[in-house]
Length: 465
Picture 1: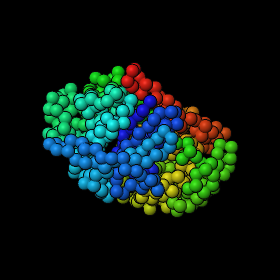
Picture 2: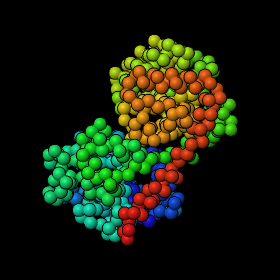
Picture 3: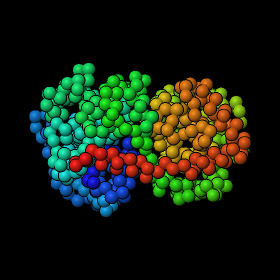
Picture 4: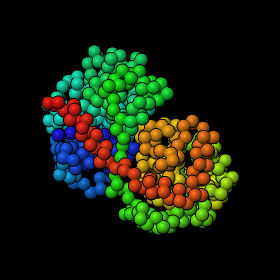
């Protein structure tokens, strides 16, 4: 099974969000399962290639509007069955960051069409696109054809980002005008790349079973709910996993003391280090609640702040790590200043501190307004930080109360606070708390199960199916 897997970011070379984690892990696990995987990403000037040795593969010349533009392609062998391709174009990818430019539509249309040219050259069985940035890939395969007639998949990691533009952007797509219709790339008079991808791909996957159902509803469908509901038979939710080699408290070099489920006593040293990092009082018997994430409404930061104001009346400590909205950052500064020794906030992104929170906190907070999958709760469970989550998306699929955490449904500070109170009750029952922690640490959310589901899906849509 020869697979072309296209992503705008791949960990560890370029990472902005969870897409990079998936693209950095799933292809490797597919390769281990025997798939011949061709992973494609842009050759960003700011990428960290970590000493990779690239060879010149050749050039591709995707159509852009009324002409063609060159993309130089470089390849590097990652493992026996995994080849990485990086597409270079100085005008599009020699910038200080990967996203948030006025011409993002054209930049990633170019990249997606470069991926299409690679798919033609590599004679693949399956083409797997991810989010709107590579959404034109399955569209081109259907509209213009591709040698070997590969099956096509589009994975929606976050429906909030759709790649929407005007008719001038559509001109640069190089698609025929007959595709600019409600049954194709047009959506309320605009050009919508992700919508087009969902109309033309053989299969649509999301990153959790619950999210696959949510996106077909007005509450979570971001305007595309009716479109997606019309293709419900093609949609499948496959839960993301985490790389257990990368996320392993027994070998993690970024934490103070390594441990596993058989040596949980060593975990206390990580808790001591964590509270010291955040300038809190060291009181080993006091429960520590942790949060790692972007400080935006999607992540539930507004209700987190309000629930924290209520909870600090009790004997608890709370550590918060992240950057984002200026108003949330200011509110967290004020909260930590009002409760020294009890609330610590680091308004930055730090991989080191994130690891320390996973390894040292007693509870991990994810009160998201929506969450397609979420990796934080999976990592937290692996490290023994019991998750407290809202029942949305992948959080609902992975955390079960009272087995592996605490769950609330209504998006409100009151309900989050109630869940935290239930967590405190279990914390003060050492036997029940230890049993829950052990269940979290021994749950299996590795990529193995998810990989097998993708392989099965690929076989359903590959040539000769």
